[in-house]
Length: 50
Figure 1 (cartoon, rainbow, N blue to C red):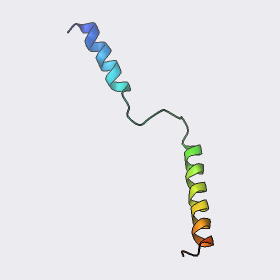
Figure 2: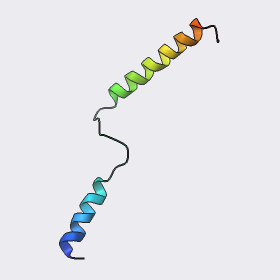
Figure 3: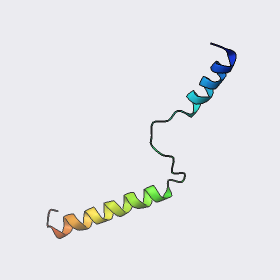
């Protein structure tokens, strides 16, 4: 391996991710999660499962 290829591989290794697309802020994810919890709780209550 040359010094250039080693430096290039190190750069790509730092950027490697497996978590899917980067969405930036987690705020929307938290809002959607809590909305799901509320809707699920309303469904359970309406069906008389609780």
